[in-house]
Length: 73
Image (tube, rainbow, N blue to C red; front, top):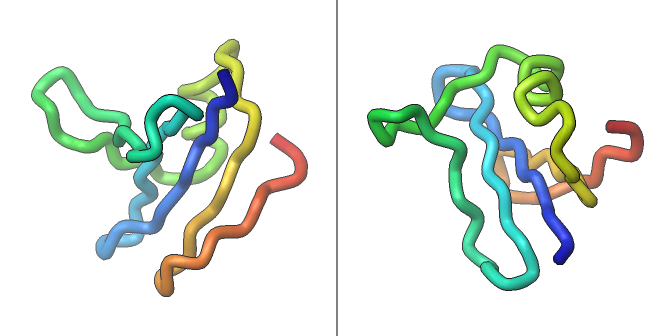
C-alpha cells in the first residue's frame, strides 16, 4: 500500500498535513485528540512528526491547488 503525504498552507501561514493511501483517495488530515487539524510551523516539524513512518511520496500543494513532489524527504 503506497502512502502519500500532502502538505498545504493554511490561511494563517501554518501548514496542514494529510495522508492518503491507494485504498483511500480522500486524504485524512492529521488531527489532535480533540479532532482539530494539527497546525505545523514548518516542513521540518512535519518531517519530525512522521519520523519512523513509511511515506512513499510527499507533495506540497500551493494556494491554487497545484501539487509538486518533494524529491528529498
